[in-house]
Image (cartoon, rainbow, N blue to C red; front, side, top):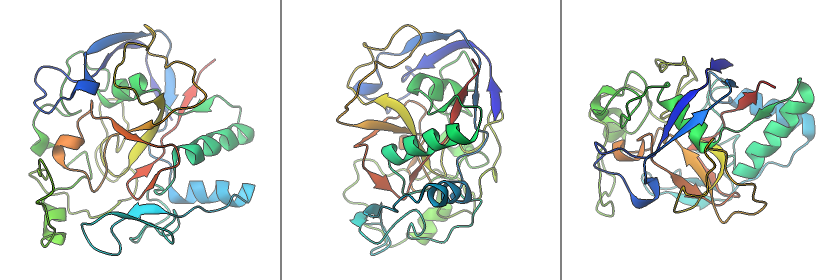
Length: 276
């Protein structure tokens, strides 16, 4: 875990973000008055497997994958976190877990420890991604996506080589990151450089579920950025993009809304811990 200090968090897209969308506006600031912990790495396949075996939890399929036809993602009943459609080691981030399963993992983790573990709020996630910076950069490393390969495993030149025959006609914007990380699909956690807080893979590798319900506005957030307590949500939010995500979709402000039951070969878990 990494200690994240209290500070002022920026949420949303700034004026330099040419891909900003209505649900990323308005840009707001929030005061985080207490430090908290965040996992240095995304939760790994081995860590999640330990939870599943300890709790005898059923392994769910119907994960979104392109294993049947490269570049064409569809739900597949046989695709699970144990077999997301590509080879993984135990030190890779777990994928094909939905929001409900992420919450179950956190609940189990609290029974094995002193407690306090949870998912990040969306405000906390963006604060961690920015490394506490006061300036609202588009990416943790600045505004130029091509500088991202030392930090982020995303859809770049390496992926373009592997997906050379992919039909891109259905994309409004198709912008692979203009650099190469020599990685395809997930990579071991911590394989690339950390951000300013010492957190690895906050962008790329797998996207990460956060606590918040998805809504088209941030007006309901309290001044501390704590989301409203809601028992049901039409959709939850994943942040950070993944190994298969284009440059404009791995912006810090980008919001990926999915049902809590959605499993995806590109979405996993990062945990936070309250210090009181």
